[in-house]
Image 1 (cartoon, rainbow, N blue to C red):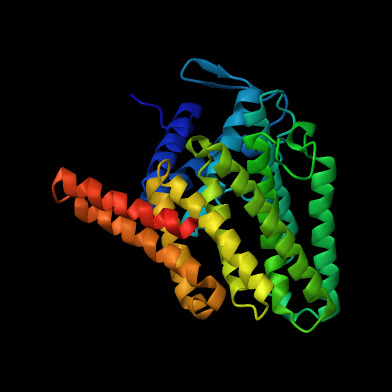
Image 2 (image 1 turned 90 degrees about the vertical axis):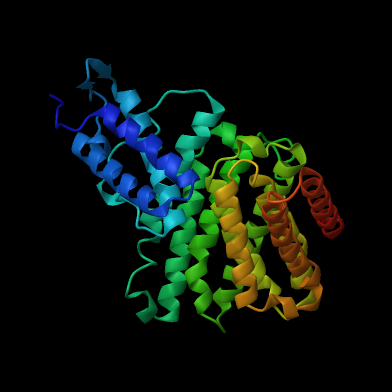
Length: 355
């Protein structure tokens, strides 16, 4: 008779099933499986592990380090599911006592993974003061003080908690490894999300500094995305990168509505980089990438950026991408020759738009 007790192998199976359904964009199954995995992790006590924690399951011995890896793998996937479905994260950071920096591993990919998990833990504990019902009732000076405090906490994380291997040798990021680029995209996305609520306060001196910080993070992310595209390393990008790109696109569309011509031009140029990246991601994460492109298109239509003169090319890019996708769907019902002919025309149109 099968045991009704929670087990490590059951949690591992739930994580695999959650990731599979997330890739296929099955939101309902993804949310349900992620909730089960979160509850299973709590029942096993993975969020309060100590250095001497050992679990025996199905005749196997799971050490403290392997359990830490499992917990942070679930934490990372929980963040991705939360961003994709809009569901609240299953892992509540104020209850987590499992350290991530105890894991001894010199592998760059794993170092990137665990540091990103700690980044989002730091971000969530920092942003708790901002995303509260009482935030709108704060005075302008109180909001400025809160903004300064949040920025200081993120900078302290960057200064004290980031391993040396994830810090580029130069500010240009040209020679940085892909994992270093992925991490800096995640870090600057956290900066964008932290600054976003403070944009509501207009007409204050703090608003200009907030906008300056948002622009700096946005352009740094776009530079990293461009470097990834030049190296043609999209076959190994993490799925979370799609959500970072969509958030950057939202900021670029916001800049597109500016009355400044230079801001419009910068937005158009960087938006092309982001759309090209989403198009490249269609080969690895087709369903999620198409959903991301659709989100950008809807946001562009809602904010009416098509009326901005310098963004006419950008709007044509969005239309051509979706026209190309439509051609692929139609061509599958026709002959093989017609399929390749329409595919060729779609690619040529995209190349002209990106030229």
